[in-house]
Image (tube, rainbow, N blue to C red; front, side, top):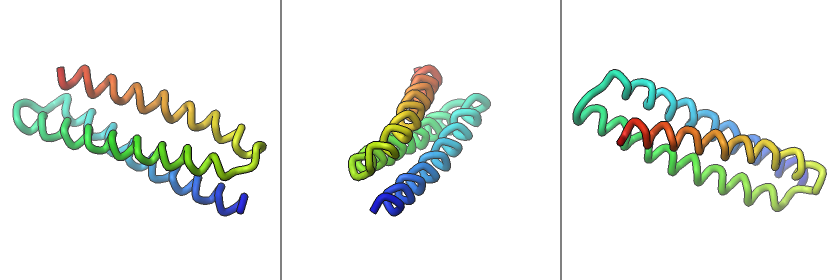
Length: 97
């Protein structure tokens, strides 16, 4: 169960990293956009942020199934992902506002 749980956590990490890249690309692109195009790009980034939040929730649920040794190490990574996502949310808010 431990190895499987870790593999699932790693799969979620890959999903999170991929969506984070997509969000970052959208936020970077929106800087050179204006009007409705910019609004659409930022709405898409907002939807992806919601998806990234869901992935982090799945990762947290997966942590509950892991032994303490693995859990402690992965919890530190989870904290970093959450901080990362908060920064992305702040960037979105500053570009939307």
